[in-house]
Length: 156
Image 1 (cartoon, one colour):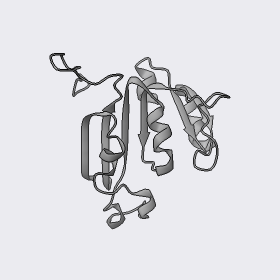
Image 2 (image 1 turned 90 degrees about the horizontal axis):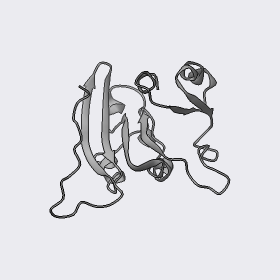
Image 3 (image 1 turned 180 degrees about the horizontal axis):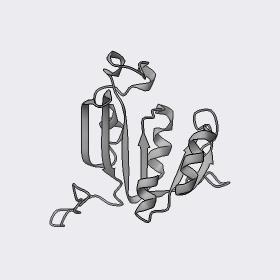
Image 4 (image 1 turned 120 degrees about the vertical axis):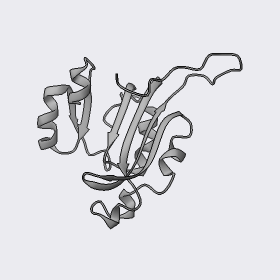
């Protein structure tokens, strides 16, 4: 949240830990919620899910939440997702299969989006196995003869 807020973005953070949110409060709107056992907190009374230009998920995996997260990405919005994957049980926690993506799982779950970047591998500091993806939700498909959107591959 701090990185996005420093660049002028409005941010929203969700966590069940008040302690985690204490730090986040300085960078935007925060909501205390147990999103694994309760209702999704970012919806109105009719069940309409709030959407965002960018949805960022890090070090978190709760498979039943994937449809909600994908529906939270606004049209032409970006999903940035990174979490632990199969193999991490050999170097630390999390080690339970429930919390580790299987090979190619993040790609499959994001197949309705346009994949801009995907990585699946090992990082050394700290040692961990991860999958990460950057994907865009398009309003419409690309048509023959149209110029594809340009997505910068660096933050220059």
